[in-house]
Amino acid sequence: MSKSKLLFHLSDLHFGLEDNEALDWVSREIAERTPDAVAITGDLTMRARHHEFAAAEKWIHSLPVPVTVEPGNHDLPNYYLPSRYLNPLGRFEAFREVVERRIELPGLALVPLNSNVPAQPRLNWSKGWISTSALAECLMQLDALPDGMRALVTVHHPLRETGTRGTALTHNGTKALRELARRNVLGVLSGHVHDPFDIMEDVGNGSVRMIGAGTLSQRIRSTPPSFNELRWDGKQLDVRVRTLGDVATSDMMIDDVPEDAMPPREPGEPVAPVNKVPRTDPPKH
Image (cartoon, rainbow, N blue to C red; front, side, top):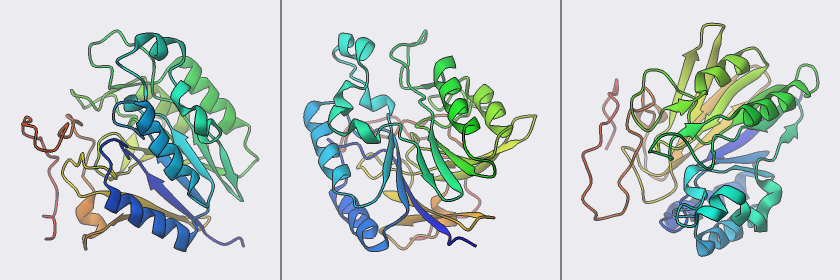
């Protein structure tokens, strides 16, 4: 029997507004624990600036383990539309080899799914959109895996389409989940909402486990900076939320994908009150 696999799932680093204490801690954890792979599910930068990507590239290339990165909505340039339309991932060039990288480990694969498009027929372009081509590419990679190999799909936006009215809604999310439910998928790793979660999503023809990571930036929503530690023993996938504070996983995880996934934009800026998802237990202090 092969040994269990240890994976670190990070998200929403937001270089430009990163939490350096949290990032230094995660770097030490990766160096000391040497996970089999690290999955980063999007929003490496705050505003897709060149210096933010340079900082992200330096940090990612310092990690001594295999890494796969999904682009997030913050990683597509908003202020220069020709770049957004013609080369939306152009600023990943310095570490393009890890972007949407499929990682195959003994018995387990990490398979990418891009949830970003350059433009959408709705005002809020921060929302997820699973294009026909992105879904086809993901399914092709899943179908090409060896018999018996399980998979974790990596994507930035949670694949929740119904039951939300705000920025968590992902166009074609239900369609994607129904296709994933037909395949040997252990779960879907995502970010975007800045709080961790672990939810079984029923999509009619089956269910899919959706696992969200928190943020490693200053843009916190209702939980402190964190990452997910995943362990797969060949039969069971365990998820533990890691944070610098002494907070239990059950107190870190929100109970559902929030309707409004927007955290405060900048420290000190006035923002609208955050609609927190109800929790079954109060957080520990």
